[in-house]
Image 1 (cartoon, rainbow, N blue to C red):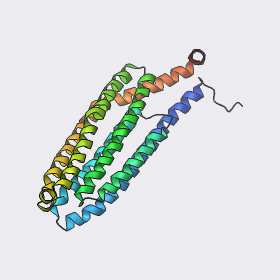
Image 2 (image 1 turned 120 degrees about the vertical axis):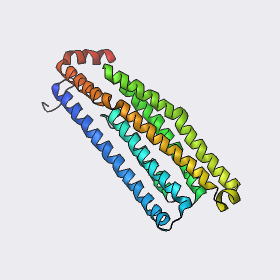
Image 3 (image 1 turned 135 degrees about the vertical axis):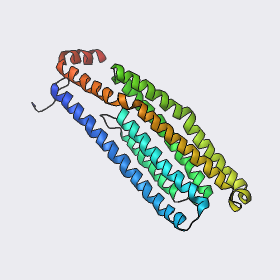
Image 4 (image 1 turned 180 degrees about the vertical axis):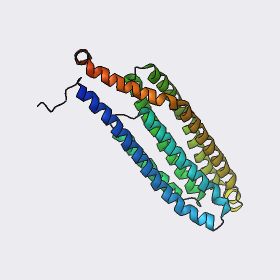
Amino acid sequence: MSDIISPGTKETGTAQGELDILVVHIELTLISIIQAVALTFLVDRSYELLVGLRMLFWPYAVTGLLIILIFWSRSLIHTLTVIRWPLDLTHNFMYIACTLVEAVTFTQLTNTVNWYALNTLFGLMVWALFVLDLRMIRRRIRDSSGPTGSKLYAIVEREQLLSIKFFMPATVVFNLLAMIAIRSWPALLIQRGGHVMLALVQLVAALGYLVYGTRFFVQVIPMIAKTRQEWREDIDTGADNPEANGMNSISGH
């Protein structure tokens, strides 16, 4: 029985810190693997377009690469700012499900109707992922009492809401309207190559969002390490004051 770690002990604080690090490693490994899988599908289809000089479809290949970079970088930011023990399996399952649709989308670089239809579905799934992750962010707001952590999560929550209320709805609507337009006017948008204009708009939007996400990451970098240090200090403080933790546990009931 002495091997059991009791709440409020120094062993508990050490275990919590180790589990936080372990979960971050799991998350980083997962997002790197799944986006590597998506990149494999994109490379396979882009090879034909590049070697065959099918330049009308090159914007789709470039946009596919930008989608991978966006997904990977956004997941990286989320991991470094939000993820800690316990592991949220629903969140990780959504990563895998989104990557499934993403990879299938990359097989449709030359089928414009399917490209925009699948991107609409992918956008809806990522939108749902943003909503799901908002719950995790608000959980971090509750358990981050330090000044840096409070400032960081106010910024992260505000940016998350911006994506939920503007960026993702705009993405879904654009892809849906593009699909409808191509189905409605195939002579203009397919036979005459008018779809390239839609592809270029999508490419520019993806590039802009990637730049925006990169700047956001640069903004929060100085606060990430300080916030995680505050977490460790909170754990150590709790371990050094087991009686206070016990009273908090009782009052919580």
